[in-house]
Length: 465
Length: 102
Image (cartoon, rainbow over all chains, first blue to last red; front, side, top):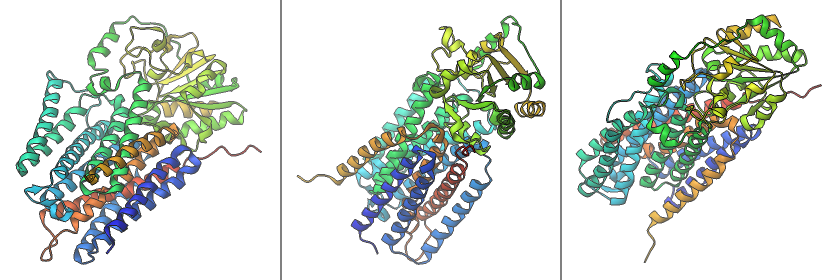
């Protein structure tokens, strides 16, 4: 049996290893080593827990069985999941962290003796507060992530669900969570604990349903942050340094990602959270606009333009993920490179459904990461490029964001695609993007619309090159 | 008067938030997806609490309501730990540099 002090030191070590795991992600070269540190930290934390309890009877075997079952399921999912489904996977994983936090809080509430927190009905006040916070945040993370998962999977419509009195209702529930926590701490009543859990689950659902599909990058980052705070809350209850450090790391990581995503859309965090953006009223207004002429072309025209270019910039978006066109795109680029054409990729911060989504898809298609650039790095290059190939992106290329103060996306940083000599825009139809606004780029002199499925169009272009 | 140990834990917590802030800002944007999956995996260190709960059954029966919640939480956290680290590994293995031109 390990002494309490010694195990605390080991928990500290595993916390430090988790910091190093995140530190490793500062560059792709060090990232694999970082992941190894993370795994090592986890092994230390679990081993130390077993040793400090020192109970290796039947209970230990049962614990190992549950651990292995979970582990096998996790490993199976990790190997099977296609890279395009990464947002769903991460949302699903968040929900599991949330639920695990709730279960640990319930276990601690029912059997506080096992955690040195007192006896049932007489739990130490501080621990009870920490436990309630951990349980409530965990429950919100769980139900919120389930909604995010359903929206990303397309099981639930991605359009925002709003109803009258939504915000007052949410505010009321949030206040009652605080009141209930207070009452729970003064009465120690288990009924109040269950009610607290139930309404926390409810508010998780209610908070996410009004948020639209394309705001998912913010939602996922936010839930990431919540799962961290839930873990930290439980960490305080268990007086466990590894959990406190990890919770704080994950909490601030998710918060920073949410901030970056909001900035990428030029919207405030509250504007996203309150939801309803891109709701139906906006898209209907675009229908009564007069028809403007567009130039459309086929794969042959596109191939001709690219063959005569000396540099091409590719702008991928969510549509590329939907059409699974990343491999076809890479093949097209390979052909272009054989003709001595310089190709680079431009990624908008909110392209896709989660932070860094496009980068992973391109990496999967064997695109070297030093050909892929962020908005600030590449935006000046559009003016010198011959062809911009927009595949599955829309709002992030809309010049309206720079010119029309009336537009809902005004002020959002966009890729200066229109500065290219010519623009090839792969899209199924002229329908507006998520923001429900027309893209001026469609009607520019130098834009050629390619109306087709992204994957099929890319393959056809390759054939014609 | 003695300082409550809670204050020490709070200090660790606050300082870790700052560490997290600086470390995460230095993460390259192209690795933001692996960042999310790895934070997922490490936040499942909550399994520590689940193990304590699972092993807290009394000598007659290892199963009671509390320990069953513990066991379930162990499986949930284990899905995340294995799934999170392995999928991160899988993603990171795909990030390759351009081959040097001959």
